Image 1: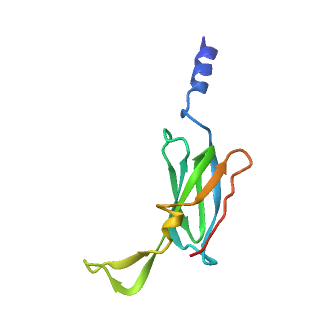
Image 2: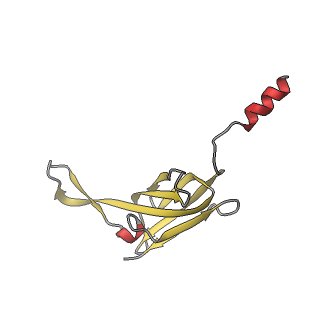
Image 3: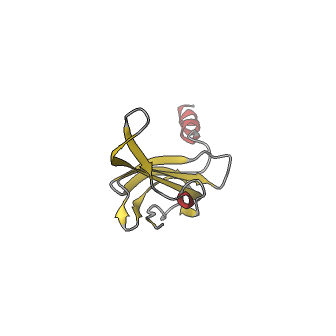
Length: 121
């Protein structure tokens, strides 16, 4: 009886495709993206996206297996420029073709856990 209970519990987990550790680098115009965000969105619309932070040109997160659209956003503070409330002005410098209108994809699965992105204007 106890073994049957353990077998049932072992089968319980997060539903859907398996997740894999994915990491890599992100460069824009040959320079590491210092601060930013990266998102992997499955082609399966019933599965929500997985997102993580880019720090010093590197990222690491868990992503569901399969083909994913990849969105990358990079931000930087513009010295000497202030926002409407006097806060530091933050510029989003990565073109739309890498985020809202992304052209990037990545296949995630066993043996496909490193994805490096070299972005250009």
